[in-house]
Image 1 (cartoon, rainbow, N blue to C red):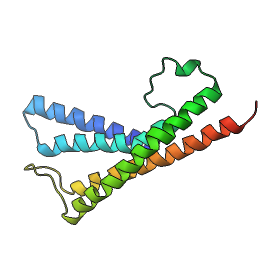
Image 2 (cartoon, rainbow, N blue to C red; image 1 turned 120 degrees about the vertical axis):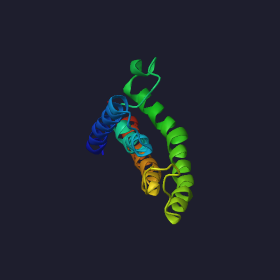
Image 3 (tube, one colour; image 1 turned 60 degrees about the vertical axis):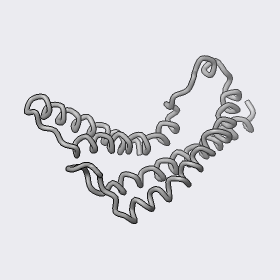
Image 4 (cartoon, helix red, strand yellow; image 1 turned 90 degrees about the horizontal axis):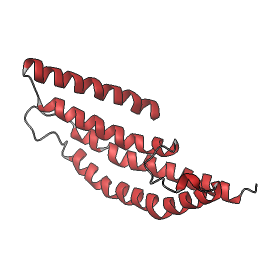
Length: 152
């Protein structure tokens, strides 16, 4: 997933550069290019969240955390994941299913003239992203429990 997100990030940069060049050099713009940028960013964020957690690169208020022992960090990760991350992932996943199902049922497209077709495909990334993040959260719980139950 990290490799896919890396390539999507490069693609997003290329799309933005082309969009800016066309807009400022030739005064050409389109709704599709704006939407493609938004959709790529959304997919990068959704699919990259689990990988970011796996790499321990997610945003954390790290004023005290880096000074804690490995066991204390494991307790914080365990409690935070059980009480905050997993419930959020479950609710977001569950609530997004009907949203995505409806989008597929009506074959949702962009409401903007010249916008992208098949918006339902982009919306499908929502439950997939939260599923991957939740699975990585379960992995973090298991890692934390392993650290807490291991002596030494």
